[in-house]
Length: 338
Image (cartoon, rainbow, N blue to C red):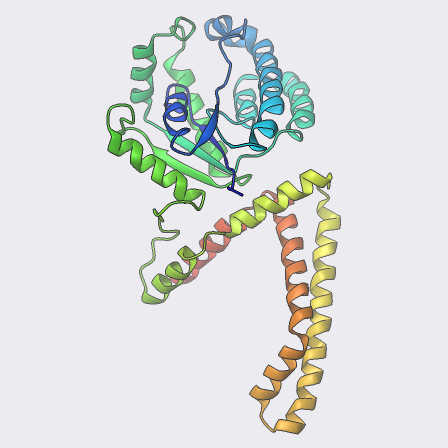
């Protein structure tokens, strides 16, 4: 059976999300889901007076986006892949930018309930562009409700997107600078974006380096890492999705205790290995061979205990909002400079 993917394209206003989604979905053999935003009756008033119309605008968008994604995504993914020009998560980004404290609290309660029912993408493609480029694109497309949009609002929105994706760990993320891209007129530009997207999904040939490695040992490590399609971020994402599917709730204390218990069980099994090793030493007279035989005896159990410990660690990292892959690579960078 052909593997199906859900790709969501994100970025600030006028960065080219819908354009890319329209161009890329056929090359990925995927259906297309476009955000319905023009039906929002508060939108033009919001751009004219953000403070007065922010709450109405945001709640309408939240419910509209929920209705569309809840109805469409799961149904489409049963039959084909899907490309969307927005994520449900971006609704909260706009809320943080536009709502006051009390309004934000009401919004957060509603968003928290709805977000649990929305499938996460397999990949988010984050498009970026400079402020001048975005303002030029807004002017060129000349949408009536965008004419009152201020330059400062777009600048604030750009910063909000950058902050949001700087700590984003919900799904794999591919960031693309669009300043010098013309995917409409330049087929090579479009081809590169398609290839990078396929590679990020594990379906292409383009493999951007995970690290800017300088030493031979680090280069070998990168080669090994790039040889695998499945990455630590994939495991963390899959574990989160599995927990959501069966209704497992985040409980930091209980998940930490579970990790301790898993490691304790692993330690106990290793104790059995060392005990068996001592017995083998008496027979073979060689410590290395004795350890190898002892490990072979306990290999299946050790494998299972290591997997259980990893599962607990993945869940704890998800509770904490930490990307294990990013944290691990950052630690390698730190160690390589000391």
